[in-house]
Image (cartoon, rainbow, N blue to C red):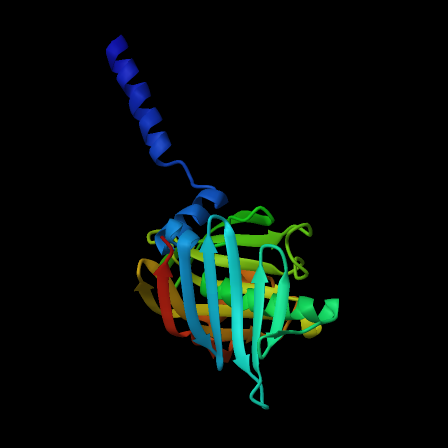
Length: 247
């Protein structure tokens, strides 16, 4: 009788452990792993986006994010953001920028690389993650995770909020939404498409939808999307993606 009771306790404990729900941190970590994991840490990634060339280099915790472009006069402009600072050169000569302008350029460079390499970066020290629960979009189940940022280390746009729909089976980020405050603010909902794996790292493009009512909660956007009530604002297309790894 004691053996049967012990076996029942062990069985119930085992089932309980198997059914343990993942928390937001664990879900994000699994999503990063499913999309490239440690490969990001030593990757050099190049791509083209809206007539500009981008390059990110990571090694031993150090990063350099670049944007290369040519202005209407043929000047070659390179922006570089590292762990320590931001700089701009024009025709290989340093350009002195006011702090406000340098901050705007830095945020612009960081934003493009951020979206292209999602979900990498969502486990940063300044990132706050909150699991809202589960929901479904087009018959598939997703974890809903809201992300905000600390003022310290969260950048000048730390007040922006994000919501990620992470597939409960594949752990890929298939949809995301965010609210921002610059330029009078706005709300966007993105649907990932054109998924491809390049040397073990996942890349996607996005259909970018807009919501005019700025009081709309981010967690309501998936319902509005399925109801066809969001306006297709643009498509975010990343071209000529290449990945290489440092030794």
